[in-house]
Image 1 (cartoon, rainbow, N blue to C red):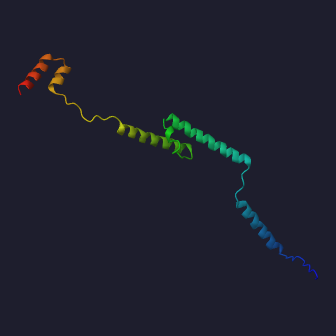
Image 2 (image 1 turned 60 degrees about the horizontal axis):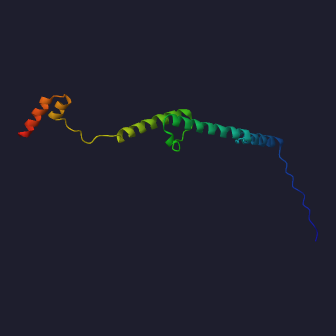
Image 3 (image 1 turned 45 degrees about the vertical axis):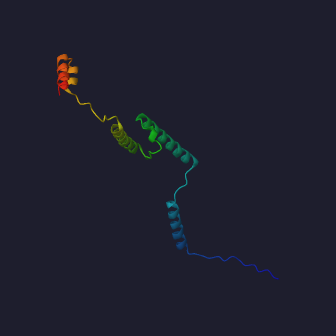
Length: 132
């Protein structure tokens, strides 16, 4: 058996075509997103942690720290607006679920006389009720 050695095929391209393809390649490489360095990634992580702490602090100062897991904001303006709206809703809920008496005792003539410390008026009401 004889071994066949094939030589690599070399293609030639005109210099003008090569230069245009090279320029196009550089343009495409420029559009690719750059990979972030470890320092940039660490800085972004620290910024996110700092903003998360700011959100926690603002919620705590507004008395809304129970809602921390529900709040998803991207910047300080959104945070302020969200806290304002949430505070309004919480105050409306507190007002609607607060104590509302079912029956008010109607003030009768005896109670009115009793508040005025009018003994004669109290007696007249009792006597009037006695003869009904």
